[in-house]
Amino acid sequence: MLGVEVSAFTSSFFYLKKGEKHMNVRLTTKLAGAVAGALLLSTAANAACGKITIADMNWPSASLMAHVDKAVLTAMGCEVELVVGATMTTWASMDAKGEPDVAPEIWANAMATLVDSAVGAGRIHIGNAAPMSGLGEGWWITPFTQDANPELVTVEDVIARPDLFPYKEDPSKGFFMGCPAGWGCQLASQSLFRAHGMADKGWVLGDPGTAAGLDGSIAKASEQGENWFGYYWSPTSLVGKYDLRKLDMGAFAGNDNWDGCIALGADGCADPQVSGWTESRVNTLLSDNFFYNGPSEGMAYFAARTWPGTIMNSMLVWMGETGGTGADAATHFLSNHSDVWKAWVDADVAATVEASL
Image 1 (cartoon, rainbow, N blue to C red):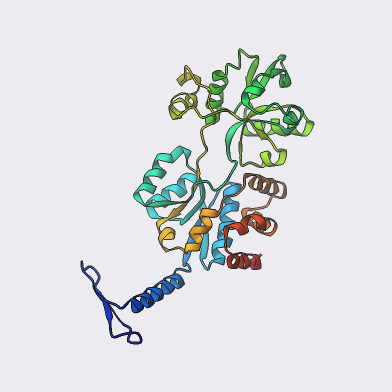
Image 2 (image 1 turned 90 degrees about the horizontal axis):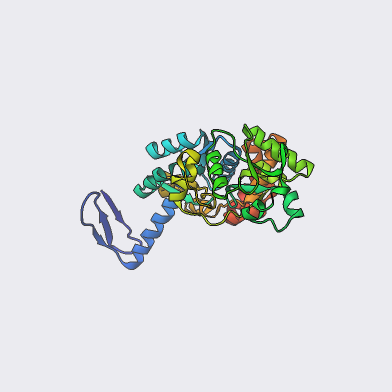
């Protein structure tokens, strides 16, 4: 039972009994406003904002984001703890237990149905549906190639020029660098290679063998000023370091074509259709606890916190070259890119963050 009497304004009172269907309320307009204001102030003070857990995911961009989120939420008065995270374990824990409170960078393509179901049921909330710009998979060329041939903008443009990418074992053919065996992109690239009829147009589909082989082929071509054409993705340090150029692959031809054919490779896809790469879905996910009890300015921060792809790639380059951790990178980012992150928070929070550096 909650009884409140405010004699300073009036002898009126309000009476609330938890669980009762009806409330006996008799308030003047003046008192109602005063009580509402007091309750709001109390709520704001108490929610300013308690303990918050953030998943420190096991790849560089996510770790960087987690440490920046920690600095900002700490400046808002939260007690922040970083907990070790990985995509599936973090997701499973959030869905089942509501912990951690924040997953900064969840790549949701492989579990989109599960995420959508949990969001629909109200167990999980999307703090930002696109926390990074310019991300995604596709087919790329080096800047050397495009600068020398500015007409090469689309995949079709490049396919028409196999002479620019000679295959070492048969220079009369062009060479396209595919994905390492066992990666999902290997099957998709195989299917798209067939959809474009590239073998008939004078192309060979290459296999880098390993991730290191793929990266090494890009580094070699970029550092020696050679043409290179193949699969890659962003955000990555290599895209940032070598300024790789993503080609326009055309419109996405639908989930039925992608999931039911292209993603299955040659064995499961007899007639693949030309398509843009399927969208990479990345979300910042929030727990019920944070959504309802966290500071309102925290919700506004996550909604505004979209990392420019060029900045993220440059930070990944910095981490790779210096060996910096997520914490080191967060300090570097906050110290050197205030023009980016100050747009995500109000002036008071920004000042507190800067004072902590």
